[in-house]
Length: 407
Image (tube, rainbow, N blue to C red; front, side):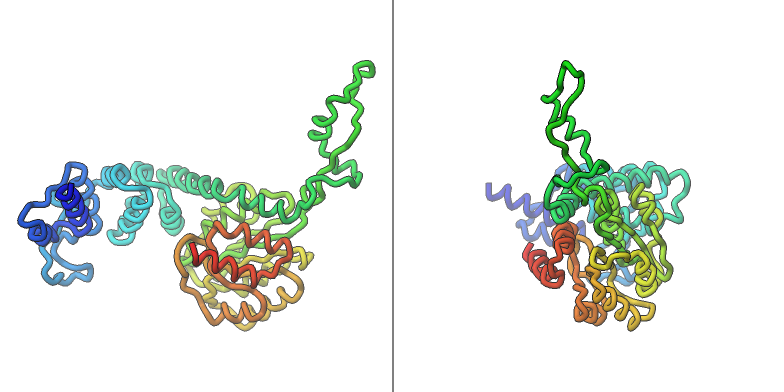
């Protein structure tokens, strides 16, 4: 049993370290050659295609000290991508597949190969790949656009499934303290529920139903009680946050009690509210990742949608590397907060680690009452619910940040 366990450990190290480690591993095992199974050989080829050097040089082009020429062992150093993708998906866990795919794009420059429909159809849809597609969307040929859209749709559907119920529950929990209200209003009658509840009061002789009680929708279910403005930095470093924010914006737009505005910006400002409400995939394809950043300009644009400050939630999603007028931006955010708007800045909206951001601007925002912190999508519903209930967002942000760091 111990010998089998040792062999499994050695074969795993062989897969991790590649062909160049064979001699050292053989010496460690007492001269016994580390044999890979047929499945492990396929896994080794898939990993070698991305992580092995094929000419004995390091990534800068110089000789790697002590390195043997490394290769996948058989055939060309770059496999047919569709077959390679099939092997990766067949033999590795889903979370590992995502890492390997992303490394293939970054280390080997295989992004151009995503332009082939048969290749794109073979990849595992994930948020990093959608970010890559969005950054390349202007170069995607017509023959690949339908496949690209299907891939983006699959990721969007998965994210909506993860988030929709939690966000809707948080919003309705904050606004609808009573499911129904006794206040009489013909336009507010919930006819479906009124009929269902009064079917037992049907009078056969009169051939009509005589309701004993009418049920009414709560006002928050019928009117736009709150305005939620999502202002999204579409610079390249914000790719994952942009995708999450777009999906969450579309969920906000589907809630009747919220009047949702979704705006994206670099040095220009684009209002994507209509696309967001109709189709989040259309919205994502309307985003142009990259370029400069003018946060002040976008905040100025968003100010026109603030009709009732005390019933407005403004969410800025940005790493705060401002290329516009920083002092004017600080003043705008301060005045917005002082007018009664609930303001917050998400430095990142993702499951990744601590983002890079402008710490000085974040501190200036926080000093004026706008908390600035990274947030995982799972914690966002609690943040929104707290904002709509009138809780202190700075204190809530601290609690959620502590909770995020503990997980």
